[in-house]
Amino acid sequence: MANADPKSSDADASAGKKPAWKKWLPIALLVLVGAAAAGGWFYWKRSADKEPHAEAQAAAPQPPVFQPLEPFTVNLNGDGLFLQTALTLQLGSQKDVEHLKLYLPQVRSRLLMLISAKTGEEISSTEGKQQLIEEIMSSVRQPFAPGLPEIQISNVFITSFVIQ
Image: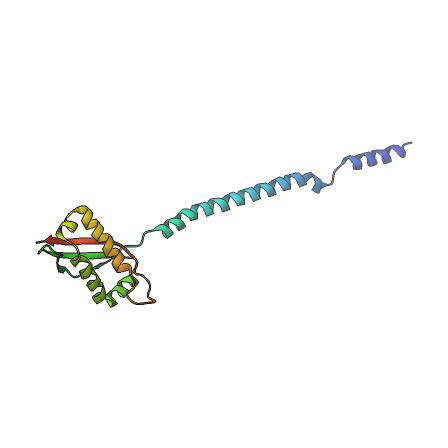
């Protein structure tokens, strides 16, 4: 009987014991999940910090490109008055400035024809000047030859305006 007791106690003891790796498995899994969560959080935080900077750089406005034109002196239609004016064009890019310079005689001709068709009464008011600016922008945007792109013009500034 003495032999039966030690064998049964060893069998009971080995059946109740877990291997060492099974004790540490839940702890190791918990550490692994925690590390993955921390890594994901750091990755998300880093990408969230970089996005506003990238958007700010992409959204940073480009400096305006201005092209002043030589002053115009134009006889106004039917009034016996003349207009002396200077204009500055705000263009989309330096490429548009170079394109405009190539066709400057056509630009000046279009503008002279446009302005000379106006009367002093039409262009003396603020609304008349604003309408003239819109018409100048439309005239300059038109291609100067078939197959050429439009010039990107965003505004026209009147820098001098004298009616006599």
